[in-house]
Length: 403
Image 1: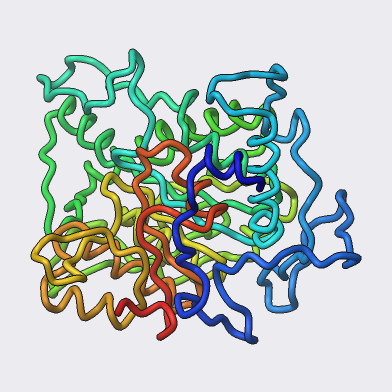
Image 2: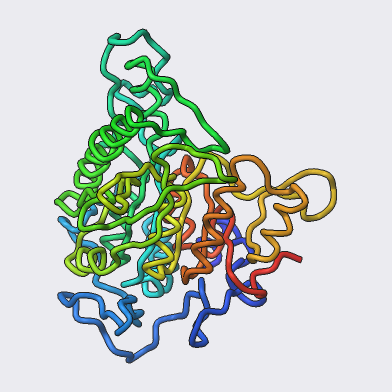
C-alpha cells in the first residue's frame, strides 16, 4: 500500500502466524501461513469441485477461486457506499491484502461452533434469555437469525471458496422451554443432566427450532439455499455412547465415538454448508444430548479440518503470561502449554472444557483451534483473513509455544 493509505488504516500488528509462531503440519506444510500467489501457477477451474485426497481429506487448492458474484452469498451493494468512510484506494488495498489468505484457505474445511451468547437476538432485538415463567405462559421464540452477523460471515466464507461446517448449541433456548414446561434444569460440571423428558425438549429445540432458524438465516445471508440442517441421527452422522464423568450417571448425555465423514464430504463437495445440531444416536437407536463444543471438536477432528473456531463471549484464553499479575489474551499457544496453564489454574472455569475439546480436535488431526469473541463484528473473517487475527489460536506442536 502507498504511504497515505497505510497511514489511514494504521500499522499492522505483528503477524502471529509467521516465524517461530508457525505450527508445522504434516508433510512440511505450515498452518496459518498465507503464501503469496505463484505467478504463472495453475489456475483452478471455477466450476470444478475442490479436489479431494484419497484419504477423504480435502486437498489444498493453490489458487484462489473466482471472486464472489451476486447469488454466491454476497449481495451487490451500491457503488460508492461510504458507510465505513474508506476511499476507493483503501478498499482496493484491503482486497489485495486479503487475497493471499483467501487463496490459502480456498477448498479447506473450517468447522465453526456457533451458539450460546453468539446466537442472534430474539425478535425485537432483545438478546437476553426469556425470564422464567409459569408453565403454559407462552411458547419461547426461536433465536432471530435473519440478521445474524456470524451467518453473514459464514456465507462470505462459502462465497470465497472455503468449505464451512457449522455446529451449534442452544442451551438458553432449551432452558427457556424447560421453564415453560415446569421441568428442572440441572447441570453437573457444565453438562445438562438429561432425563427422558429433558431429552425430548433438547431434541425439539436443537434439531427443530434452533437448527431451522440457523438454516433459514444462513440461506437468507447467502441469498440462495446453501444450508442443510442435520442432527446426529441423520445418516448416522454422530454416533455416541453414554458419557459418565467420574462414574456419575447424567442420563441421556453422550460422547461421540464416530462421525460419518463420508456423508459430510458429499454435502461439502455438492456446495452445501452442513448445520449440525448436537443430538447423537447410539446403539439400538438411543439418542443422546451432546455438548456442542465436544460435537464440534469431534467433527473437526474426524474431517481433519484446517481450523476449528469456537465463537464465545470472551476475548479468548486469558493468562498472566508476562507476570505482571494481570491476565491478558494469549494470542497463541501450543497444546503442552495449554495443559500447563490448566494445571496451574491460569485457564479456569468454562474455558477449561472448551480448551480440552480443542486439544482433542488437534490430537485427532485438526490443523489449529481458535477461540474468539463471536460478538465482535466480523470476528470470523478477521481471524481467518488477517495477519493480526483476534482471540487465541491453539496448535499441536512446539512452534506455537508461548514464551
